[in-house]
Image (cartoon, rainbow, N blue to C red; front, side, top):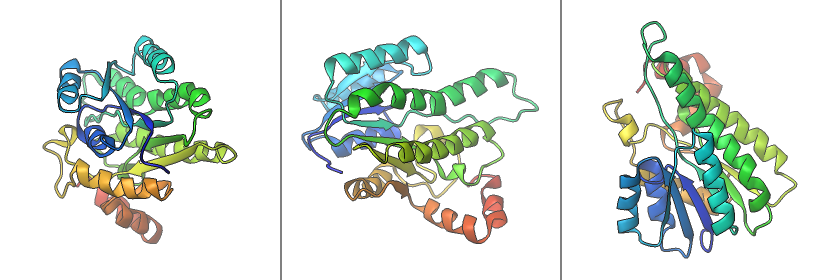
Length: 245
């Protein structure tokens, strides 16, 4: 996969892994468009990286999603790379969470539904362009869930399986389908949770190598070990992740 002269849409590109991806692809003759809900964070990225195009939207809202698609199709019809990075994780117990259904809806829509819809809605445009690629971001928790985030883990397992099946469908097309499977990453979402985190920049460096070499599944850091343990001793692997890391 080429890493230059792309038109790249990165969702959730104002912080964390998304911002690290911006930093990596910026300056390589790529046109980068990022989305996020927070306009202040988007403007901060724009100040540091003036060539980046920003678009404020909440992809869980149908009108915002439609507006984003219309914007891309009209202004950036050369889009050839979509990186589905936007995500949210809530930790809660089904027995005691007062806002249970609201959090369930938001996690599923953010982490899974909006990603699938973006793939579907941008595919007709992207597949006509040179060197098209779609990237999804799942999680090591797709393999072994933790008890405090059942819906988040379920959405990441769904993304993992969707990505595989979508890749199968794209085999006879020029579009390449990549998946990043991160370990615990040091971002605002994981603040106060777990230990042994890697930086977003370290994750992106490893993914970038795989992206260049058409390695479609990027098991990053400790997820390599987890993948091995799931094959060798699945119950042991599940026990390790049950209470989080």
